[in-house]
Image (cartoon, rainbow, N blue to C red; front, top):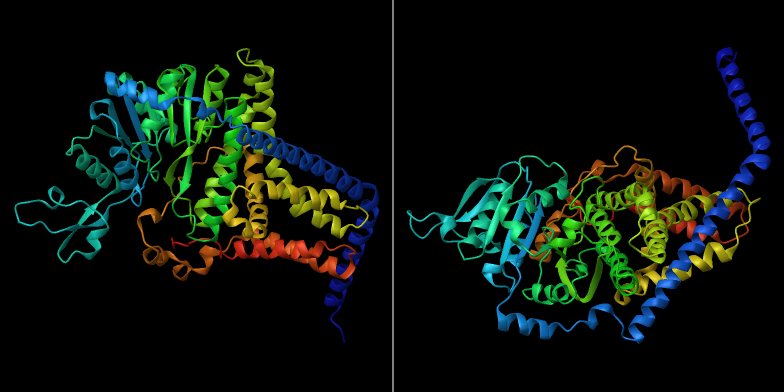
Length: 563
């Protein structure tokens, strides 16, 4: 005889299922389908906006190159350099290097900055250290005699690993950075080491406090480099003359050169995105409106302009963009030097890259919220420049691009597969995205064969960027989250040593990302549904995109370092 409880439970379950099915049929046609149509048209409109913006910039960059009207080529730097050398009238330059727990790469930036070719009495290297790392053991080679301390005879470098007799000293990141500064100071370089007990204001706070030092107030210009950036010796000679020639110029920005672009697929895909940013976005902004976003590093500011704009503010996590927009509203101009590159390192772990993209997406959206009224009410710039800053710089690039990439390609298209009542035009779903993708990827010819992987990975990352953008617009939780992008020091390691951090040492729990796995399952379900009941070929894209979410979700992207 059947258990009456089980029978009753089964009946209740079937009844609930039937009720849900009836409810779905009632709301599907009058509510869900019209809502999906509306969302599809909204995403299609945003897709056209993004495509139009890419076409506009492509036309401008082609004209700039064909007509040879790049703004930075109009300056006569050689004559200015000769005048400075003849008159010995070099301006005072402050070089700021902010860092936080950068034990893997701190020596790269400090060494490169101290080695720059500029009169030693006209350059101050200021290292701003907020490190809080615990004490670790550092290998130091044994001295030649017992009376001679090891740090007076040897420098810490890769050769230590092959030393026969070594000391292991307990040092923190702070002590290592301070030692490096003292080492360069003993060679005659004017180095100032500044340590803060708190991270108040994060990077903006460190830079602001650095400018408040008495010796910094005598400087005419300030160059800024993050801890993994390595400027060439002639960097100042190729940037300062711009500022001396044009008194209206506030910022000279160099592009980035990635020393570890070939480290893994993750870094290759990042290179494709950033090459477009520098080759097109920065160049177009410089050549048309004399405005673009400061990249936070590898740039030189006129001290007068920095002070006039209100200095560094920590109201968002994009203090560099904040300063650039405020300086532009004060009438200052910028120039991007496309043929001057500064070596740096790309984040090679997915965890570090994800945190970086959260900050880069949340910060601009939050800044747009806070500065929209200020931009509209500004009377010192033209209406066209206001339109460029609000529509092109902020709205399309920082908001629309993230929304349309995720919601359209990872939500609306799969939903249209599940609801065939909503017909998705191929012109919107295929042709416009393909053209937009080609315009983005063409700036990195050597990686063009990776374009499919780049598309799929960008769609995965768009989930995090769209989420961060919403957080920034609403000033929700994590809006002020600041996590320094961890670097592995790949610029100073060979391939064998860098591979010691590979995924084999990682625990499986550390590698799983639940959101990506759930999105992969959703897209895989849509793939199967389209194969069984669909009449289009969307299942080809949906299957590839679901696999991309699974690859990222199960931790098979980038280099891995165990916690």
